[in-house]
Image (cartoon, rainbow, N blue to C red):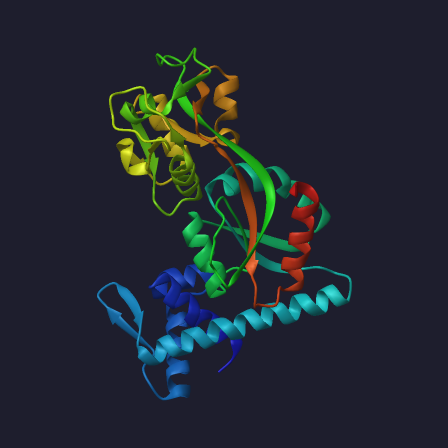
Length: 314
């Protein structure tokens, strides 16, 4: 058994395919099969079952997968640690980012990073906030940038990185386009494009609406504390899994939505979209640099974190 065989094995499990694993590690399918066979002979048990078109780890294979990931991670940290000691930061680093940071924030600074650290190969895992947080908690990535604060989590450390302001975004042809703001009662009646529930944007919208406390002008029952609202009160016409899809939905008349101005600034500048405030809603939020409290950060991740803090931190 060697680390290369373990890397091939992990690739097979991740890709659920011998052929796709071969493409990922630049080996032929027969060579991949040969490596897996050698591992099975070494451990004297079956590690991979072929179920139809999918390659699925056996129970023994699942145990090996977890340990193999740890060994490969330790190998990468060892190499990057020695390189850092020698003053030569190099190696492969994967970070996580939710949709806004991965699309609109990281690309703006990545050029400067690669020029300063040309020997670091950076990969960005993109997902919603819950997916990135889970990857950090499980050790899949060392650091991530997400758009929601994760409370009551003993595993995660979060640091405010950059301010963001969300606004109600409508098409330039919408009847509200000339308004500076609208009231929340009007918003609740309008077709609204939502995000998936795991997104930081949706978490921020939910928090803002839940914090809204206003007296209605309607005949609805009120008390001295006003009316409480929730995301469930929105007239959701459709949900999308990305801000890009939400923007296209707005442009094509599927509804209005609350989005980060970072994501729509080009459309606003071009006169295709308009940004409004919603009376009573605080739509300011932050993006958070998120790491694991109990895991040691690798030298490469430390380099990236220090760089991004110098570029973006409040």
